[in-house]
Length: 80
Image (tube, rainbow, N blue to C red; front, top):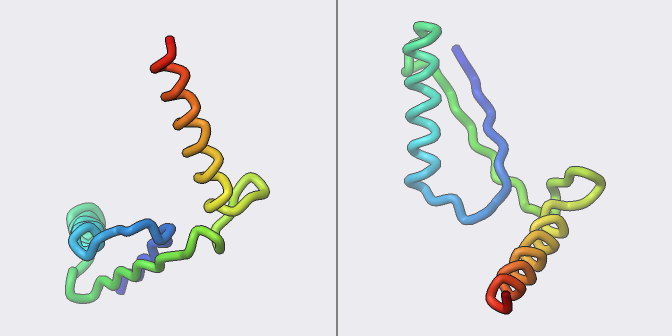
């Protein structure tokens, strides 16, 4: 009985997208490992970006900085 736990940040992923992830992981386990889809369990955990960190910062902080940098770069490109 395969059990797969997928952890992603909570970023507005739709039900349809999650259903696709579940279907494709299930298909891969059946095709590659011969696992019965009826015995395959896929769990998707959505983690708030304040609760997921890397490089010593929360994902919220990292993404805010990246968005500000992208906005600044776009403004500079318009001026050039």
